[in-house]
Image (cartoon, rainbow, N blue to C red; front, side, top):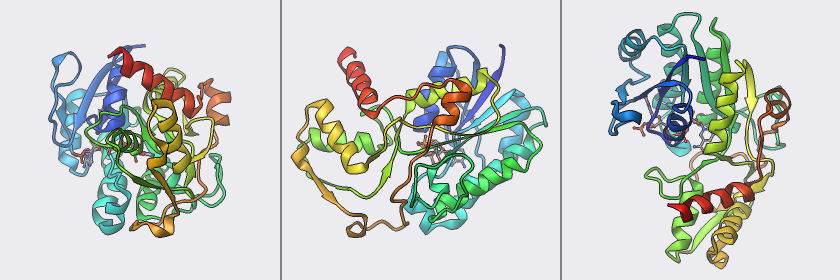
Length: 297
Ligand SMILES: NC(=O)c1ccc[n+]([C@@H]2O[C@H](COP(=O)([O-])OP(=O)(O)OC[C@H]3O[C@@H](n4cnc5c(N)ncnc54)[C@H](OP(=O)(O)O)[C@@H]3O)[C@@H](O)[C@H]2O)c1
């Protein structure tokens, strides 16, 4: 299969892992709003700002990709709540710009989130009604809807709480817990936000399957267990031999979140497992694999 794949937001946490994984089989064109790194095989990451139509159109016409994976997003949930205009520009209008710039044969794979749901009675299946409670969720849903209304072949992959490397210059929940506990810092972690986190290499493998099987439509991905942020933090402490007494259980109402958070969220993964034969792992197993990698390096 000789597909040329353009990745937006390729310097974000998913984009970086995805470049490496997909680069094993495909020609990858990594793009970023303000490239700072060298990509695989020492080629430069191309500049592409998805809120600037000319930048999107120039890059796409120069590269003519068969598939675009849109990892670019404004992902800070509280920042989105404070600045609706910027959130909408990136998470919804950015998708529109990509659709306008490509021909109708180009497949678009869009990353989305469990925040499109109300988050009261998860885990959610793909056909459950959406009802975002935060502006991040609203803007991501709008991005999904723009794509669903387009003529392009598409796949929307929803995931929740992405995590990967503990040494990450854009900290995720896992990296923050690992780093804080390693430095003996006390942390406050909520007991009332439940989901099934997605380990980045496993999510990248799921995206690989979407490409290889030419899957279309909406799929949910995550671990095969559902746990609160507090339980996730305690598991991190256990697997990495860190001090779990430094994790202080709190409820969301005691935290100063700007955007409301889904409490009982999570994504059911039966469809992606049954239809695409995607393997889902327990969070415990994913953490153990990270530990193994750290010991090898
Ligand atoms: N993080 C999570 O827990 C989570 C959970 C569920 C779903 N998702 C979804 O998964 C996808 C990947 O998330 P992630 O965690 O990898 O996010 P991330 O680390 O925040 O990466 C997003 C990337 O998009 C870039 N970006 C922002 N505005 C852009 C623009 N106008 N044009 C081009 N690039 C732009 C960012 O660049 P700058 O850093 O320079 O702004 C960043 O490199 C997103 O669609 C997100 O909504 C994430």
